[in-house]
Length: 297
Image 1: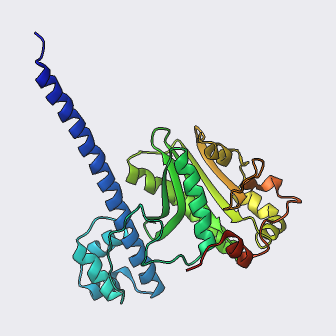
Image 2 (image 1 turned 120 degrees about the vertical axis):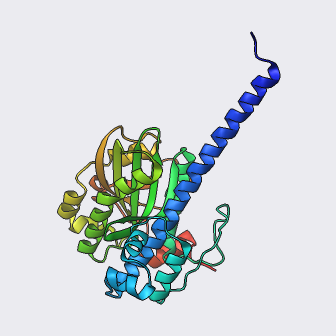
Image 3 (image 1 turned 90 degrees about the vertical axis):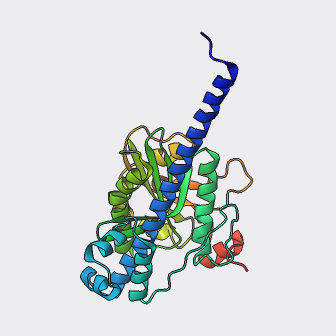
C-alpha cells in the first residue's frame, strides 16, 4: 500500500522540524557553555588576584564550597550564584544581548586595536573557507582559566586550530608559559563543549605582528622558539588553504600582517624559517595603528 501524499509531506515536515530543533539545541548548549566558562574564568581570575581562597570566597558570597567550585569550573549554576560571587569580589555583574551582525559594540572598545585587527583578518579568512570560528574564547581547567585569541574548527574532520596573536613580546618566559598552558588544556575543553569527543588534529599557532619590534625577538631567540614551536609551518599553511591536517598535534610560530594588500604575490604571513633577511612591514606598534587605520573613534 502507498502512503497518501499528505502523510508523506507531514513526515517530511516533522523531520525537518526535528532537525531544526536539534541544531537550535546544539547552538544553545554551546552558547551556554561559552557564557558560564566566561563567568567562571572571570571569577577565578579576580579571586586569585585578590589572594582569596575558594573556601573564603564561598563564605563571603554565602554559597556552598561546591557551588563556588562549580561556578569557577565552568559548570552551569543559578544566576544568583554568579551575582553573589561577583558582589563578594566587588565586581558589578552585567549581562547584555549583542547583535553578532554588528562589527562594533557601542559599549566596548578594543584595548589593543592592532591585536583585534589581526584576529579580524584571520577570522574573516577562515570563515570564508567554511570553518566555525570563535574569538576571545574562554576555557577553564581546574585552577587554570584563560582565553584563546582565536579558535577555528571542523567537527567533520575533528580538527582544531588555535591562534595566539602577539603585537609585542616583552617577556619571553611569560609568553611561552601562557601559550603552553593553553595548548595543553584548551583542546580537551573545547572538544567536550563542542561534542567532538577528541580532536584527531590540533594546530596551535603563535602569530607575531610583522613589525620591527617582533622580528628581532624571534631572530634573537631562534633556539627558544624552535623548542616551543618545533613543527614546520605546513600545518598552519594547510589550514590557511582550507584543508586541516588529518592528525597530530602541531605547534607553529609565524609573523602575520593584518593587511592583505592588493598584490597577488603579497604574503600575509611567513613561517619562522623564512624570517632571515625579511624586512618588517611596520616600524613599531604606533605605525601599525596608523597604517591599519585602527583605534580611531
